[in-house]
Image (cartoon, rainbow, N blue to C red; front, side, top):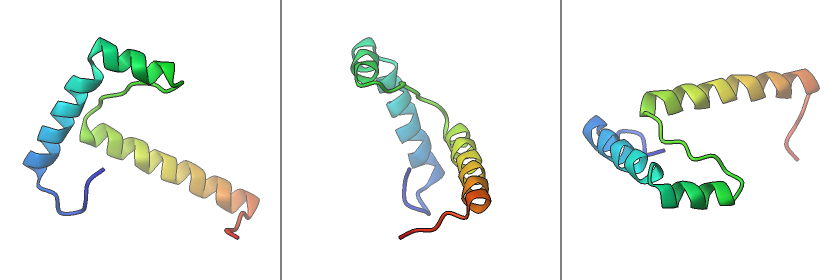
Length: 69
């Protein structure tokens, strides 16, 4: 994630660098040892994932009438 208005070239540079780092075996081992899944995807894929999560959780919140306390 980055602040709104961050330039596309900067987003692409960060994305490329993070994907390269996440692909390193020692980083993958460290991430999986913490019960997480290493993922280094493109900004568009991440945005689609976030949007799908919003839709999923919004529906559940409405269905169960959850409220914040």
